[in-house]
Amino acid sequence: MSHQELVDLQGYLKFFLLLVVFVIFYSYAYSIYKRDKKGKRDFEKYSNLVHDDSIDSKPLEERNNNLDEKEKEK
Image (cartoon, rainbow, N blue to C red; front, side, top):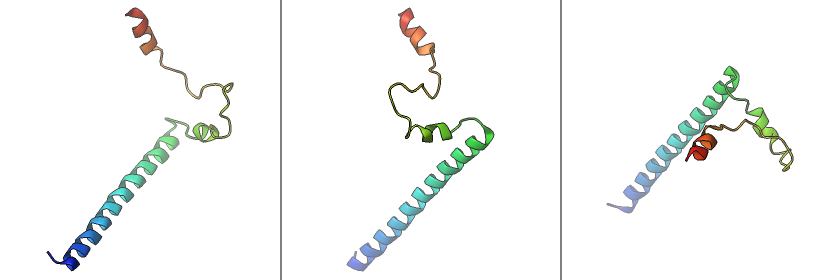
């Protein structure tokens, strides 16, 4: 395999890798947008966490206590 063929192959691989990363990123961004519009999850409260991260602030979501109850039963 010549040097030029290896450089061409490397270019094609970089292009397809970039394409895969692009598709994954935009599908994730679209899923966040769709969940936010349906009201399944409010992502704005997570962005406010950057400004309000003290130890005294209240939790963003209620914790599922099913795990705590199972651990107490053991």
